[in-house]
Amino acid sequence: MPSYDGAGLAGVLPSVVHSLGVAGPRGPFPLPPARRAVVVLVDGLGLELLRSRSGHAPFLRSLLAGSPSLTSGFPSTTATSMGTFGTGLPPGAHGLVGYEVLIPGEDRLLNELSWEDGPDPFVWQPSETVFQRAEAAGVAVTRVGPHYFDGSGLTNAALRGGGFRAARGLEAAVDTTLAAVRETPRSLVYLYWGDLDKVGHVHGCRSWQWGDELEQIDAQLARLSEALPTDTSLTITADHGMVDAPHALRIDLAHDEELAAGIRHVAGEFRGLQLHCEDGAAADVMQTWSDRVGERAWIRSRDEAIDQGWFGPVTQRVRPRIGEIIVAMRENFAIVDSRSARPQLLSLLGLHGSLTPDELAIPMLHRMANSQATGR
Image (cartoon, rainbow, N blue to C red; front, top):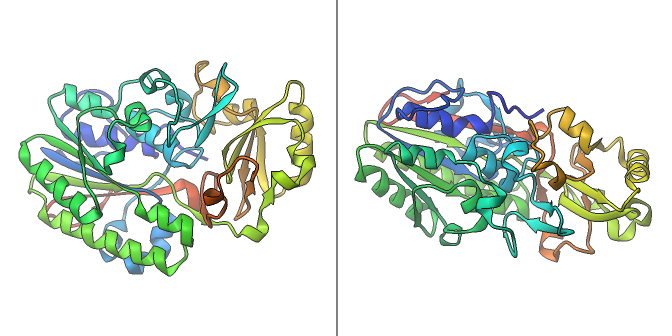
């Protein structure tokens, strides 16, 4: 199960900013004091994948010894994890509870990655971010990533605070990060890299293409580490892992009238569905899905999932965004809906969003610049 009270993604940034002397929640990981810090989030770098493909990543492998296994939270997807990472709160509190979620009162779904026609992100997620807290304490905060992230709905909801610098390509992003961290004696620089996740989606996370991308990431992060000022810490983490879900094993709701019956909105994603039902249909939908796919998925009502801690403590503001029925896939199973999903999404091989260790487990690798590599 996801961890929201310690060994989870929510504790990474609070622990880093505490090591910089920022007052407030200490975070669960006792990091050594530092004047400056760089935090790198590699999208899709699950811990189990890193362990099994570590031959492609000698630098990251050197940090694995003694490093903990964190959990990303549920659903194990980027939008939700960015909320957890950026605020230090569980999904049930920050409210970014899926790739696609219901907008209460509007009878429509919000894609929390694209944020197209979405609500005000400052209202949708009103809590202070860790970046904002660090900035208020006098730390120079810089976020580095693709230009289209600057001012996006998800960025404003989950990662607001400090300044943004666009970079095209990982080498340029590393150079930009180094320039930013050297500018002031007390700084926090966050670098996001998303291409490993993209390669995994298209080619599969067991593909040679995924291994090649990991090699490039490893080389650039090794260069980053060696070039950091001596009073700087480096922390590397991820937002989720991934599994390869063969197309032949999937069910398409567009061609399965029995499973599609009684459902008004199919939210979430292919490995972690959130079903919003027609009025009065939830009990029948639950029974049908339990009978049909209960051996291939964990199926819970919204109340059951909340009671079992899937989303952490859930506020009344967030509760109606969550589907009435949650379907988290086991092994490499997936359920798609070609009536609404774009063809590009339907073609993807690597998927995530569920509760398997391959999707939930993420690394937290830490070292001080020019010191012996250590995992924390």
